[in-house]
Length: 354
Ligand code: FNR
Image 1 (cartoon, rainbow, N blue to C red):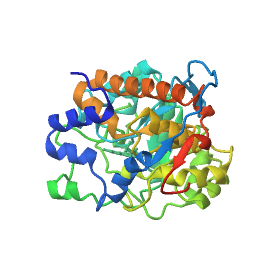
Image 2: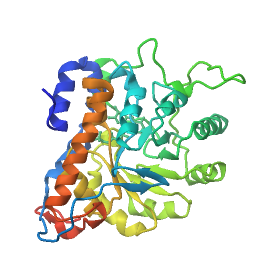
Image 3: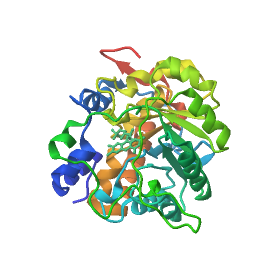
Image 4: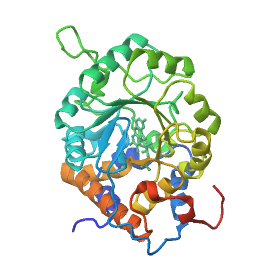
């Protein structure tokens, strides 16, 4: 039976995956308060449709950071796709390319960026700025040469979140044969050296973002900006977009759901920076609520891993096709001709104000 929803797909993946791998993907940090909050926030906002607006069939195509996409739903960066399926990131990239969706490749991908790029679809590359600037620079050059269209710099991880499921399961490292392929420095003849570990650094600051801005002409998005003051500050650093994200509840626990933090950030940056929201998006109606509060696009993390685990490329294709049809239907039912048509007048808050 084909899953009718992302939640059905998640249940199917859970039944298939080795429990420690399932926990690695599904889990959050500490008490998983933020993890639960992310999905709950969407359920607590109602939609009040407008009728008889005659907008016609909704259009989903959009442009983000200079990339055309057939839908305003981006694949968020998630590590280790080869733990979900032997074809890993290659399968994900093929499904995204076929759907015309932007795939954000994680720095911790288990396939090298050059090999993922062969799928031909629009790619962004997620970067943890490394204290070793020489390594970061070499990686940025690799990513540029591979044809990636933007860098997504994750700024919510000065240290690694405490994920107690992984500690309990003893998940310390990738199994033999797998590694973070982008962390293998390339030698002069393109040969790949041994993989380094990804460093998390509490000394990173806005000066490092300024340094990256000087280094590359690729558009830069900052991922994990949640405070309106940081959103305003990012305007001074010449960045091109923000991901409003709490890392899927995997970094600081008890951070509110990004959906609840979106409106103040949209107010802070106005039209100057496009916002991508991620965390808990599981339905087309969820995406519509984020658009109504100021997001230009949403991103999905775990659902891609569930699709990959269940069906490889076809499973990821199914995730994107479910969300596409749900979003089209939600927009039509709300009287919207596109995501830009969604505004706060459609939203009903029973327990909190944005
Ligand atoms: C992530 N996320 C993530 N973020 C990032 O910047 N770099 C990374 O390598 C990863 N890796 C990663 C692995 C796994 C297993 C998960 C679940 C998440 C966070 C990801 O980009 C995104 O912010 C969240 O996953 C969004 O929430 P949902 O859609 O999973 O609820």
